[in-house]
Amino acid sequence: MIAAITLFLVVSISALITKIATIALIHTGLSTDSAKFQSRSAYTGVGFTTSESEKIMNHPVRRRIIFNLMIIGNAGIVTVMSSLILTFILPETLASKLYGLLIVVVGMALVFWAIRSKWVDRALSAVINRMLKRYTDIDIQDFAAILHLKDDFKISEKLILEKDWMANKAIRDLNLREEGLTILGIDRHGDDYLGSPNGNAIILPEDVITVYGKSEVINSVFNRKQDFKAEIEHKAFVKKEEERLEEQTHSKKEN
Image (tube, rainbow, N blue to C red):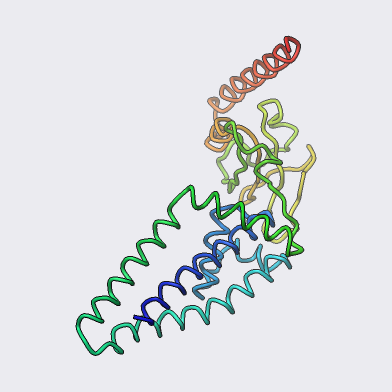
């Protein structure tokens, strides 16, 4: 019985620890999906080798978070396995084993519900944010709010291929700003990351670009190939952006 309760508590605490680590990684600028994946990978000791892993190793704050998570994770997994074994070995009666199994099943169901619950996630995130800001030196930044990642705005990455519309062109010649799209950076293999590139920067095949703008525009630009359709779509979105800006200006004058 005690072993089963211990198992439930350890799993609950493990879920809380990975949640804290995920939010801390998000505040360092890592995307939500990447933060979840890396925190759970580090806690379980899986250690997938990905481009996000390299970004973590090159960032001192992220590296410290992952390092602590790996240490805590090793102890937590050992405790979980020990408790699970003891749950079904120690009891001498069938009733005790069934009670232990019931606690494990109900406990895991509650943990799974809490992990999937949006209400729990929002409430827990708010508490963790306050605690991180008060008791740690992590630079707490709400990047979603700063970049206004709502109203269909988003940040996205794209691996440039040889036949893509943007390949082998200078940023100034693409006129992406006229479509409401901004290139935040260019990640080129073997070179330093080029942040906030100017109009003279040329986008090459195999580059990974980071852009900010409306989802509709990003999807259109990312899917364009080097043909006549690309220019037609470009002009259409330029016109659409001009109309959006005119509408905003008109709305401000009325207010």
